[in-house]
Length: 239
Image (cartoon, rainbow, N blue to C red; front, side, top):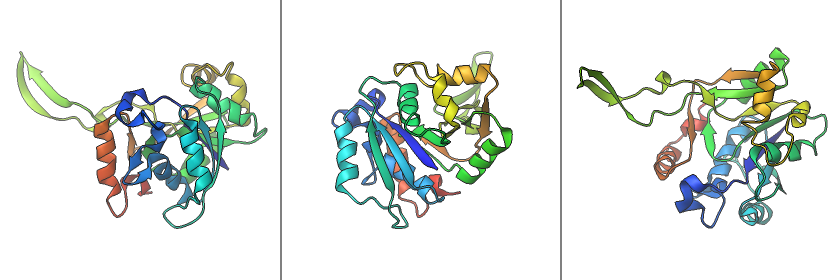
C-alpha cells in the first residue's frame, strides 16, 4: 500500500522555519519531520511513499534524489515526489495523486504531524466497516492552563488533560479509490470539501486514536518534538 504525504503548503504558522524550505523539511534533531513521519510507517511494514509537493518543491525533490533515505532500521524507503502546484489545496493534492493510482486504496496524511498510530489496526478498522474513507480521530494537545472559577475566584489552576479535549481530524486517512471523485477541483480543501461530502453520504468513519499525536504548528511544538526525538524510543514510535 502507498502513502500519500501532503507536503506542499506554505507553512505560514511557523514562518520562522519555512522561509527557505517547506514545513515537512523542518529539522527535528537533524532529520526532517517528514523522515520521522515516514519512519512511523516503515517500522510497521509500509515503505512506499508519494510526496505531494508545492511550495519550495525543489527542496524535497533534491533531498529525495540526492540521498538513499533509510529508516531507523537501515531499510531503504521507496519515495516518489509529485509537484501538485503551488496553490493547490489539500483535496487537490490528494486527488491528483490518487488519479495516477486507479483502483488503489491509499493512506494519506499531512507532512507535519507525528503519531503512534497502529497502521495494522487502522487498516483493519477500515476493512471491517465497508465505507469509502476513514479518518483518524485524535485529541488535541492541551495548550492552555485550565482554571476552575467560583464567583470570580480561581479555585484551581493547572494543566488541562489532553483527554478532556474533544476529537479532531488527526490525518492518517485510509481512502478507497472512489474518494478522488469527491474532490471537484484542485483549489478545494480536503477538509471542507470531500470529507464533508463523504460524511453527508455516511461514507466517512472515524478510527479513534488515544495515543500520542502532535502537530508542528509553532516553534514551541518543534522544540517539544526535538526533546522527544532524543528519547531511546520517541513517543510516535511506541506502537
